[in-house]
Image (spheres, rainbow, N blue to C red):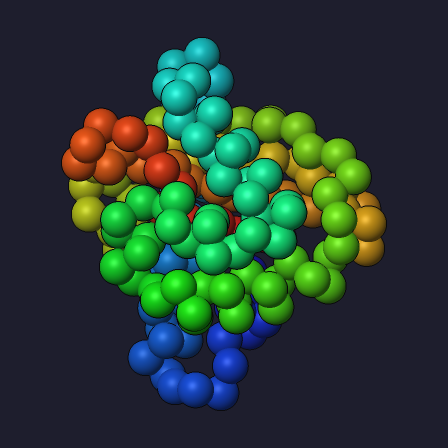
Length: 155
């Protein structure tokens, strides 16, 4: 987890560094905390939302990925900041060669985030420049009832 927050922040301030570390830490901790590992208990619409969102990121459409993210996500980081952060993380690993969902964990709370309906989705991903990575994508149910991504982490 130490490498990702460093790659996601510039020297532009401790406040953003803490925000990014908090978001990434919450997503990583949520994955390791209790909850059901039964993929069938996780809503299929959360899985579909995560995969559609990842497709935007895979295509390098980072601005659109911010637009399609959860309101909580958009409130935590500006579009410009997100584009800079995700470009810094995704460019070095290269194109996605293969991706497989390995775990989906429904959660009602995550450390440092408001209570809600979350699904922490762990994916085993092979990138062109990093053969064995784990992506964690966390969709949450927005106020309109639609699942949208609220967190993204690569380790």
